[in-house]
Image 1 (cartoon, rainbow, N blue to C red):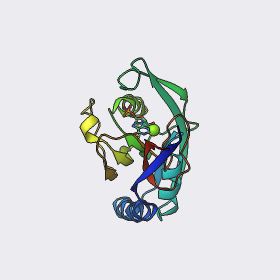
Image 2 (cartoon, rainbow, N blue to C red):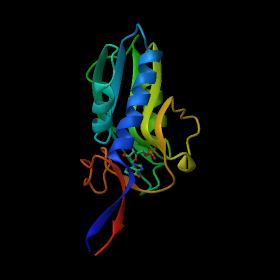
Image 3 (tube, protein in one colour):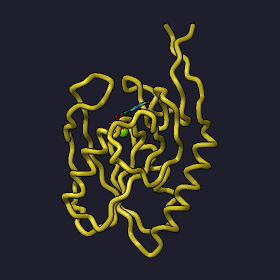
Length: 176
Ligand code: IMP
Ligand code: MG
């Protein structure tokens, strides 16, 4: 059966909201340098869009991890597939995520990053599904949109590796 995508958040709305969040970050980090950490693969698109709007000096690095052990409810073990290239000690660091669901991935990553002694560590996400949170210790500093408990795609997010390139946030629906 062919899949149809229903638009949940339009490209224009996504873009406008990233403008606002970037403006807030520019104000909050005035006079500082910000090191962005992209969690591959989903966050690539959001990080690019955000970074283009930042006027403060920015550097970036990439890491990749996967969680397994409990099917779709991600409360399993997180494995680091690709670590950062550079140390983060003494730097103002911001983790960039596409979507925070249970918080399992971030709970692990935040502990791992804190142990490396950054000067500061903040978290910025395109989407948050707060109703799904298991790890309440995960505090999000910058959220573009909160969404209900739906499986979304686009803006970097995938369903079986598809739809990452959609310029809007959509929901997969089966159709004719
Ligand atoms: P968490 O560890 O449960 O917070 O899951 C976070 C990761 O699961 C995200 O970075 C996404 O890669 C993936 N994920 C969670 N919800 C969705 C969704 O609705 N669409 C696509 N990926 C999702
Ligand atoms: Mg992700």
